[in-house]
Each structure stands twice: as structure tokens, then as C-alpha cells.
Image (cartoon, rainbow, N blue to C red; front, side, top):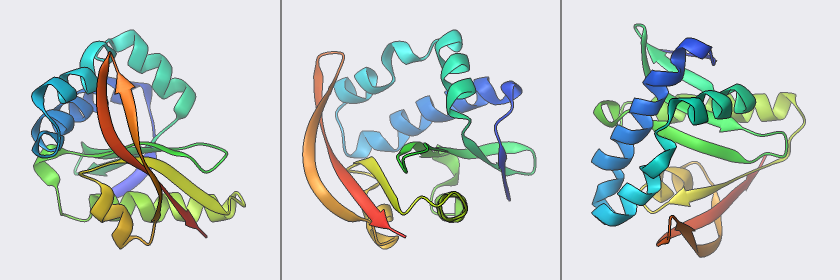
Length: 153
């Protein structure tokens, strides 16, 4: 498995990975109504194309298949950290987070933080992120619980 830079041709695979992961994995911790609101209207190709062009995510690829993606912003914010629903607990998240941490260090980013789902909280805790606060967010009129978590490098 490799971690590489985003390419425009990755857009549809990333959209599908995001949708499938939320609907097959996060559904264990959130209601159907919540996962529908989570993915909702964002399943628009042009929206995703523009988002990915601006965010330039890191892509985890295994034998030519995209199995994960994550975004690191200049301020240390980790946005959109997802691993393929069919490849959970196989080291993809660890590989992506190691890449993010190494990239952050090289860019002299000293603090990483993310809004972490109930589902992803144990993973981030394993990687020594601490909970700053539990929060309630709203997407399309539906409320969700998640956690602001951080790690100092």
C-alpha cells in the first residue's frame, strides 16, 4: 500500500468511498437519518471535484484501488479522514495518519486537530489524540455528536 497525492481522476472513487464508509461503517454509531444527512447533497461530482482540487488530499492506494483518503490543512486541521468500508482494521488509517504526522512535522505544524466521529474516536485515541470537547454539529437540519480532538507533535 502506498500514500500518494490526489489526482483529478480519483474524484469518483473518493466520492464512492466516502458514501459507502458512512453508510456501512458509521451507521453503527449514527442513525439512518444522520448518515443520510451526513452524505446528502454532497454526492455531487462538481462539488467534490472542486473540494478535492482545493484540499489536495492524501490518497491511500492498494494495488491500484483507492482504499482511503485524508486532508491536512495548513493550520493542522485534519478534514475528511476515511478508510474504505471493505478495508477496515487493515492499517490504512495508520498509514494515512503516519503520513499526515510526517508531513505536518516537515511543514512545521505543531498541532493536529480534527472533528472526530463516534466511530473514529477510538482510532484517534490510540494515536494519542486527546478530546478537547464533545460537541453537537448540524448537517441539513440533523444533529450529530462528535469530538474535537487534538495532538501536539
